[in-house]
Amino acid sequence: MAKSIDVSDLNIYYGDFLAVEGVNIAIPARSVTAFIGPSGCGKSTFLRSLNRMHEVIPGAHVQGKVLIDGEDLYADEMDPVNVRRMVGMVFQRPNPFPTMSIYDNVLAGQKLNSKRMKKSESDAIVERSLRSAGLWAEVKDRLSRPGSGLSGGQQQRLCIARAISVEPEVLLMDEPCSALDPISTSVIEDLIHELKEKYTIVIVTHNMQQAARVSDETAFFNLSGVGKPGKLVESGRTEKIFSNPDEEATEAYIQGRFG
Amino acid sequence: MTSQLAPEPAKARRTPTRPGDRVFFGISFGAALVILLTLAGVAIFLTAEGIPGVTASADQVKSGLSFPAYVGPLVYGTLLAAVIALVLAVPVAIGVALFISHFSPRRLSSVFGYVIDLLAAVPSVVYGAWGIIFLAPTIVPFYRWLYDNLGFIPLFAGPPSATGSTILTAGIVLAIMVLPIVTAICREIFLQTPRLHQEAALALGATRWEMVRMAVFPYARSGIVSASMLGLGRALGETMAVAMVLSPALVVTPNLISSTNPNTIASNIALSFPEASGLTVNALIASGLVLFVITFAVNFAARAIVDRRKDFSGAN
Image (cartoon, rainbow over all chains, first blue to last red; front, side, top):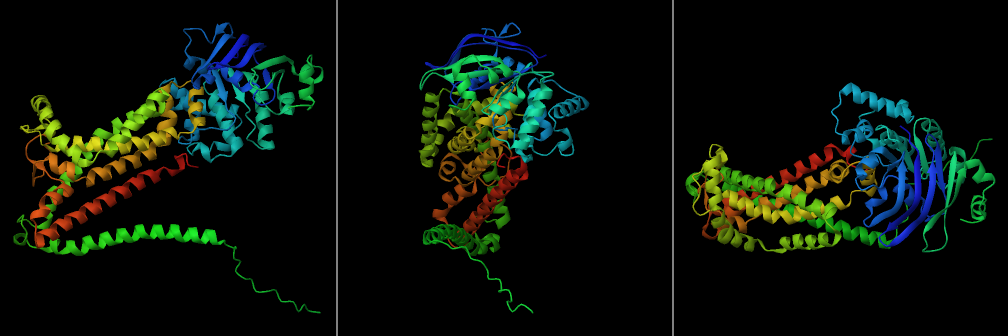
């Protein structure tokens, strides 16, 4: 569990369009790495390339290597379905399955592995996942109700519970708090702190304070111009990026002088 | 000093309305009213004209049967033909719709969509002609095979019809006729599945088919039911194609492939009307009333099915 990610010379294309160019980054295990940068700079695209979710758009492909503990995600024999079982994802807007109960939502990933489980076993997984997501106390009396009846923040924690119920190596979060109010946001941020004990977490955020609060490492992405590919400008310890970055552009962005 | 200012009596507050809104309200309300009036008119006509047919004694009508004995086999035939049509059409329609919405390359899917829509534009008399001239003779060997191999099932007890003019042939023709509408609605619903839910399934490591089962089908379920019911409505009421394909008798039998077949209400009205007079006409109209009630019941049942799991529908 909890593996490190090594990306070398990664180019991401949508058809002929080069969206992200030349990313080299090492993401350590059991830590939180934040991606920051202006809109359209490719940070979400890069995040999605870490579990091959960008491939749901026809024509998307990559050059380069993404290694998770030495295993190449883009090797020929690697099935994207297996990649996604290893690398979980939480989306910008909470997306519990509306037709499933809270209980079934948490177990959705388990069902895909098509293991026959005893009731006691699945009960245990549901409780453990909901506890890890800090939602157990709020929903334990209404597990059979639809997940869509919860508040936005609760739904997002339900999605986190769903993602971690299959015990992935890595958890990707694509702006997980952007649709939430400040109180729900702070609950999720506390949760991220707890989850990094067990998982490698990568989070995209537009909120620089959030990046500073939750992350150990920060990576700054930028566009060199309209229609040009996004690039990784610099990455490093969060304290360093926020106090003493190497690049002028990083400092300008963090101080709010542009973007 | 007591206050002389009594509080003003509370006036009912009225939100100001604009003329445009009032006009539009009038138009849409009028349109809704026309529907109700039309339906009421049809119901009143059927009831008023039908009652003499229901109460007529057996020797007053051409069939020489009391009304329940006359209409029973027709109801059975109507339901049987419609059920055969749905059983055959719905799985195919779901498959085709799913192929168009989630599996085929985009260019192919639009071509497919047009072809399916074209099927809906073919008039029913053409389907009837195709059914009797091409399908019925072609399918006779298949009926013989069913009889030889599956004859122990009452459905295929035979003896197989030599012309192929059976209720199963009629059901197949009906299936082809309801296919486009069921497919078109299913396709629209499948396409509306929120991207978020599909991505949620894929991100959990679902294959394409698992994603469809996890995100698309549950979301589309009420739509599939509605589509099937619309298809059923069409199959129940279809007249021309059945009248042309079927060689009818007044029987109730589970046998789908023999030469004695129950007729459907609509087809029976079309076939008997030209030679009917007096109370026989009333009896035919009464059978129309029965069809009207069946269609109503089917639609209510569909609503009830869709409403039962409203909380989980994804509409909230």
